[in-house]
Image (cartoon, rainbow over all chains, first blue to last red; front, side, top):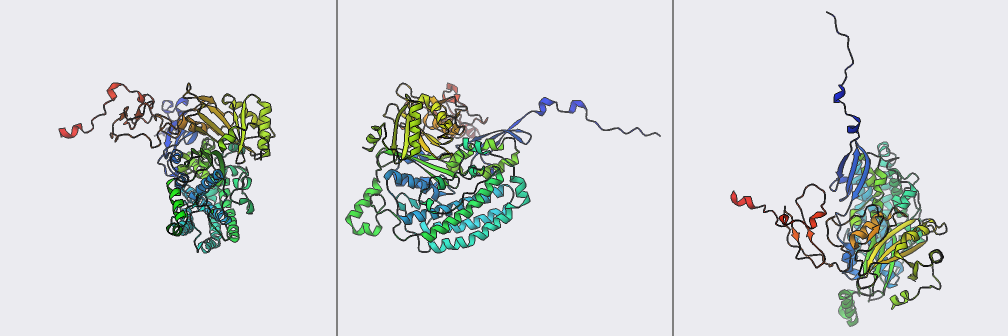
Length: 409
Length: 231
């Protein structure tokens, strides 16, 4: 018996896809409930296989009308609404809002309040960056980083709790200074954190910075060229990762930042890895600032000495007629800044946080507009991810560190 | 009082910010007829220009090498309900080369144009895109030439523009929505606000813009409990 000559197997031509079918694209929704979108961001992705051809962010799911709400409240009542915008950095929002109201009023806060505000804002920056680091590493599969980051964040939240009694939505920084004096154990808590944190920071670097898997997932991915980042209005680490050294704390110093020595880390390539490194190095610089703020913290009042702007002490209210009147006037009516408009920019952990306040001379802001850094940064997302794979979208969202509460306001 | 002072000072003697002063001088020379006012308050320079020329002014400010306002920090609007023109559109410009800052203002809207339009500046800074969409969404101002003039924060079928001063601060009180059906409201809304669609059982995922004026057959919500009695 003679065997047949073996021949190569072949798929019949009728069963192969023709060119037109192969070019078909698919449109999928990523979010609003996707865990890596850090909130409720919906991305409408047009895909060719796994490659992203087009991305359209859809926002607004967390719109709570904060700007409209503020128009109906007196100035110090709106303060608590600002906590809820960037809920990972409430104190930085408080600071921006307070500076804007103080500029409208034309007042200046005492030295102690300035130093305390800087220390608290930088602690808040570290806390915010720790959430970013933990969650973006978790998104890319590094689970243990998340646990370590939240361990250190707890230390910072403990400090906030000692100050204000609240861990997150503190409203501790307010127009006119601080809500209350710093607690007696403030210095001890902060110094303890300063002592512990550098070692922990080295641990994070050890876990990720030279980790081959981390580098493979982040380096050269989702590029944002400097000129594009500027044109799109990006700010904060997202802009600095692309090599533009714009930091509001350096360029338009507020609350006494000009007296602190710190560096502004700047990336070179504008990829996910650079944005990661910028934030990692920023935590070290923030620690330097906190150290200097603690060393230079003066004694004295923590609020302006003006009962028309900050409420008199409870003891005064029950013993002094005038204090009672001030207390009553302040909580029923509030204060009336002269008519005018100001725009105050601060460097929040996410970027340039701007408050545009318009006063018509009444006790309520005529208009409060928030220039949210995440809102502007998110505009750059389609540019970053087009041409990359779905799995890179997760890395890109993590690298711009958006908070949807602030995007939607 | 302070407001009067600001309004009444078109020629400023000594602006505290030299770059802002240079900006005013540049604009007065380049656009002599279009700069309406320049004033300073708390060290911040505000230049009011003619709304129809805003894009040209912005482009000139970006391209002038001495000023180089290459960064749009913020665009927003303010509704001065009683005033004519009604709206301020406010641009916060920043230069990442010189670190100069300036605020531009364009005033639009009057009784004849309830939904005014002004040129887009997305052609100057692409980052203006979402800021202008936000203004369109919340104020109802339109931007001619905008690549994607749609709502950004509110649902696409929302009626009205919430940040207008004649939009009620507490929102519009709506009756309990009828789950699973379409609820059309035309009585509880203030005059001029039109109808509001709350929820739909339309699962196609495509928000419909035409359901604001539905035909009569859709006016009665489907009775989802009709079968319960039969059982």
